[in-house]
Figure 1 (cartoon, one colour):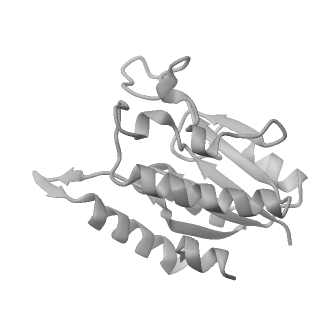
Figure 2: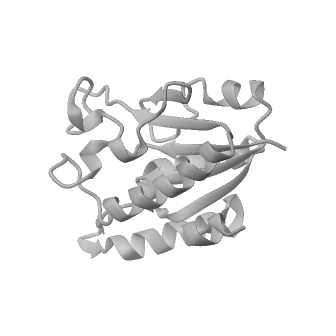
Amino acid sequence: MMTALLIIDIQNDYFDNGAMTLVDSDKSCDNARLILEKFREQRLPIIHIQHLALKPTATFFLPNTIGAEIHKKVKPLEKEKIIIKHYPNSFRETELFDYLKNNNITDLVICGMMTHMCVDATARAAKDFGFNCTVIGDACATKDLEIIGRKVKAKEVQKSFLAALDYFYSTVKLTKQYLNE
């Protein structure tokens, strides 16, 4: 068994003054940084996922903008893998699946942004492809949503999506819990 860290879309547009600010993005990024440091110390594989928008109507993650850059707190080192994606599912039309298989990776530790989109889509796809997944819940961030004219606060979105992932698709842990194992 080989475990890799998958850091999804921790990019500048999700932080204060970005084009799509998330709730608690700083706190989530700090936790992702702690997980990243552990993987670096243990010399385990690290994969950074970077979303670049292709749709002409996109309002964030626009190519060649500061907002699309990976946040400085989790900036990849030269030897760390970066995979560019254009859809919420990090496997769709990317080299992720082949990279994981070619490197004998069986288990993924996942953190990133947005919980209800790219983290969710990627964790579900990873499980469907046969990978064992752990999602670090407090190293992920989301935003308020709206459904049928009703607002759903980010805290509730976060709990709901993590609870759904924990049911079958992954094991959800907190940063402290994961680091203390």
